[in-house]
Image (cartoon, rainbow, N blue to C red; front, side, top):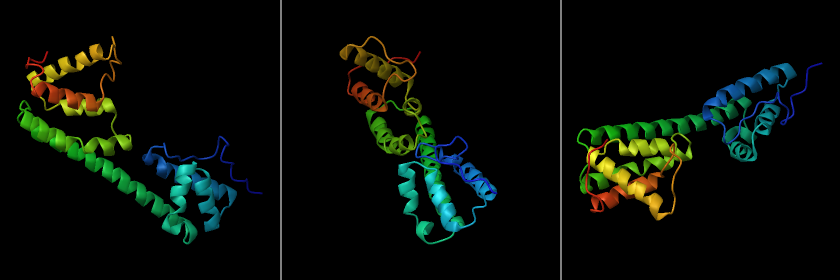
Length: 203
């Protein structure tokens, strides 16, 4: 007699949730199909039912509205899911590539004037929403990328301005691995270029 499919809360059950890395999706389906073979699950409707059972509520709702969930084969349903995640990953890669190209363009002549800073900030600030929402970049990584094309003088003046935030907020220290938000860093550049601090060499 063939073994039953594992219950969703069993250790042997495959899982794919909204917090799971999309790159794990193919592994999820490979594991699922192994279990189908062992448990002799052959009906498309059953396969689709098990696929959504091993997800969380958010994923289950998203997958159930796909074109081939109600009508269609399991392979068509699987293809719908994989295609939707391929487009998400492609979008992340496009945003990353766009950010790299933007930074490279401004590094050719480092930013030290307000007009250049505003142009760079305007182009840069549309990218973090995509990259942070999909957990592609952390706040610290985005801050580092934003600071890359700054001139030495502007970079260090921004550091001084950011250090003042601790005093204004009554704080003596911050997490050294993630000291400031991207929004705070962007605002510090505007303050500096409006004459709050004079330029100084980067150490």
